[in-house]
Amino acid sequence: MSSKSELDLSCPVCFEIFTNPVLLSCSHSFCRDCLQKWWREKQTHECPVCKKMHLLSELPLNLALKNLCEAFLLEKDRRGSTQSEDRCSEHLEKLKLFCQDHLQPVCVVCRDSKEHKKHRFRPIDEAARYHKGILQKTLNPLKEKLKIFEQTKGHCDQTAKHIELQTQNTQRQIKEQFKKLHQFLQEEEEARMTALKEEEEQKIELIKLMIEAMDMKISFLSDIIRATEENLRSKDVLFLQNYKAALERVQQYPLMEDPQLIPETLIDVAKHLGNLNFNIWNKMKDIVSYTPVILDPNSAHPGLILSEDLTSVRFGERQKLPDNPERFDFHHCVLGSEGFNSGTHSWDIEVRDYKICAVGVVKESVHLKGEISAGYLAICLHDEQYTAVSPALPDAVVSAKKKLERIRMYLDFDRGKLSFYDPGDNTHIHTFKQTFTEKLFPCIQTETKLPVKILPVPVSVTVEKQVPVTTGWFR
Image (tube, rainbow, N blue to C red; front, side, top):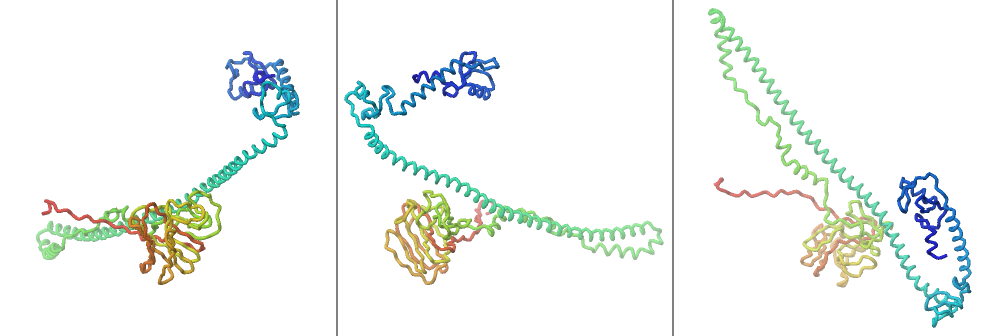
């Protein structure tokens, strides 16, 4: 049977040879299971081809079509078994030759046919060995390519897991930092509310004492006034008998000082609200720190362990980290998170062990994979010996008056200078001089288990005072 026949015997839903075909009133046939599944999904009994509604509850079996399908499958199986015996599908002869022009096996009848006239032929076994070799050579690069894709996919899977872990750790640290800030603000709010309440209590108590004193004097004066007025209403003889005493009482109180309101008895609102945000922010500098260089964990060699605040690094057990392009894989190094391409910059580094350590800068264009032989400037510290290293210059041993526990790096990008100092007494150690044409990143190399730390700088808040301008109003 032809491929046309196979198409005619295929279900319009599953595109396979009909299985238990049923016939609809519109004359279209479908596999029973395919049609029932279609109706369950669509929730309407319509024909999948013409969309006509099917009203019958029973699905009649298309017996003629079922018989045709079974006959077709039997014939297909027979032909398959015949072809599996390496015989020509057209002449049913043994396939003994290989046509090198059509690149297909043929029988001896095919060789003599018009279709293969003047073609080149080789024995089937010889052609198979030859073309297997060609295909194998063609297949090997694909295998290598497949291996690369599988390895890269593995790296991507590892990177995705690492991203999730980075996100979780970063979220935790953000929450911890804000928790500290919230706690500071809450404590500061409570302290200021307490101060306000204490001032209220003190000044209310003062006002109460003043009121009590006023009440006593008001009561005393009221008694004198009442007694004097009663004496004035008495008979003349009695009045004159009490006159001298009444006059003395009345005359002594006009000498009493008038009551005065005590100044600054109101709440000092300005003290509590004036520049409140600024004053809290200014006080906050005592609990915050600023580090001029922050290390980039995505650049750190897997054998390095960074502190949570990304300001120190130490040598440790190798970690399973993504092999991203910006990560060192040979040198035990880590870069700063930001590079410099102008201006002046300074940062101090604390070094507590000199097993193997180097501090310096690396150019942005340096490829971090493998051994790095160019694009860096650094001071190496090893067994208390200090060496200035740069691929453009011969290594130079530099001297220091004492064992350095801190090193200050000062970069003047525009003037092309990278200097190293002892921050204890600001003693100069070494200066590299060259023209910088690309961004430079701070870099630390270490193989010691004691941390190498970038030190924070003092935080201060200054207020710029404005100079008054003389105008006509103040001449």
